Length: 322
Ligand code: FAD
Image 1 (tube, rainbow, N blue to C red):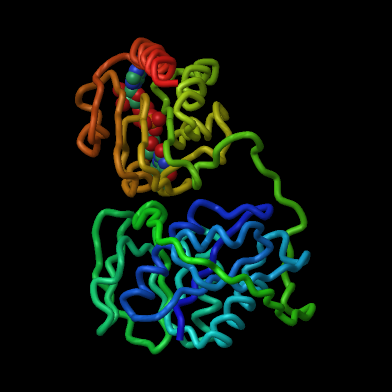
Image 2 (cartoon, rainbow, N blue to C red):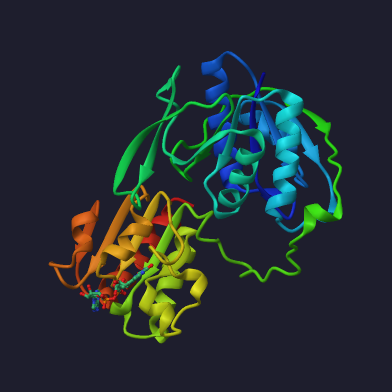
């Protein structure tokens, strides 16, 4: 009985959350006195998972799975879980895995808990801490089924190195046309930019920036920090920025290490999507802006004055520390 972990990849490259869920699986395996096995689909460099404590990788190589398909990917996880006799299955809490985990849970009769924030509090009964109500509270949830599926929140457990040598085994899954009853035909991606979901740092702008012509400084700041750019809902509604950058309750959730909010008031619907981020820095001209209550660091000032100064200082710092 090993712990099974589903490691997500894109175009052959593991996503950052793959290493985080691998770290988490390795920790759970240690608590249960067993080993951690990964299932990877069309990923290269599978041996890199050994760095995070994975001793075996079941590798599925199948052109039909090049674009994400919840039903077909779930079938591979179910087959791997049955082969390995896995009692605990670890996945991320990405939107893709939130589609496939319920399919796996239904087929295996497993209990599934998403948005898990930390290593299990206890393994008997199996209890995990998860965020609820758009990260406004925590629930301590027991999973009572024989098989358990845990969806780990991005950036909650972190990467924990635990070097072992990973054996790689080819794993084939029998597919029929019925497994592909829905099919993605094309995926349009923003290229050359860090995606909000994978970013460690996000620089986000709101209506306080007055217009799309002022986004140059946001992009420059993001470039220097290696960050992704994001925005509030009205900014994308007005077409100043693409909808893919809209974060919040009705946009994308962000769980990064550093979220810099510039000219964003901090409405509850915006905060709902960013409260899982570790450190929040707010730049706003209005000292009464609600975002300051949720901020770790705040600068009361005009963005058009503060941001260029920040860029200059960061450039100096980089030059001195190159
Ligand atoms: P504003 O509220 O207009 O705030 C602009 C801020 O910029 C102000 O605080 C102001 O002091 C500051 N400012 C002005 N000039 C400067 C300057 N020169 N320098 C620095 N600061 C300056 N919103 C989201 O973002 N995401 C969501 O997912 C979302 N979902 C919603 C769902 C529902 C059902 C509803 C009803 C609303 C939703 N909203 C969402 C909208 C939300 O309620 C707010 O209206 C929105 O977040 C405000 O965006 P903003 O902060 O950019 O603009």
